[in-house]
Length: 98
Image 1 (tube, rainbow, N blue to C red):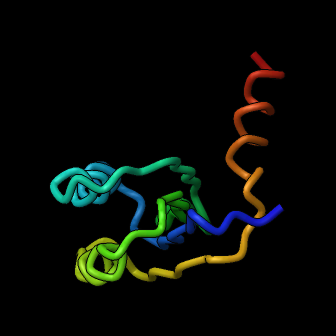
Image 2 (image 1 turned 180 degrees about the vertical axis):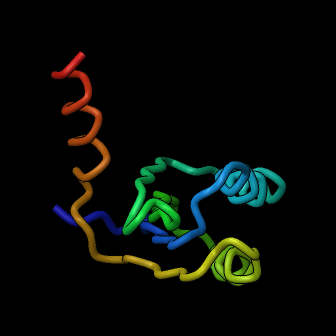
């Protein structure tokens, strides 16, 4: 099942303390809610990939432009077609392994 009211913003970022704070702070300052966040290391641990689940909004284009300006953000992609169960499946997996 694909979701049409949300999108996933995929970020490739430098992996060091403070990066997550800069990104979430950008959303907070603009009163733009993050519905979900997944993050994991890539390659040799110096780079991470973040998946931000957000509602479609007229402000989204501006948020993306601002994300692209952040020093530690190397790439921004917007995923419109994705499986809506992605974030729920992660939650269930974690609950099963408690």
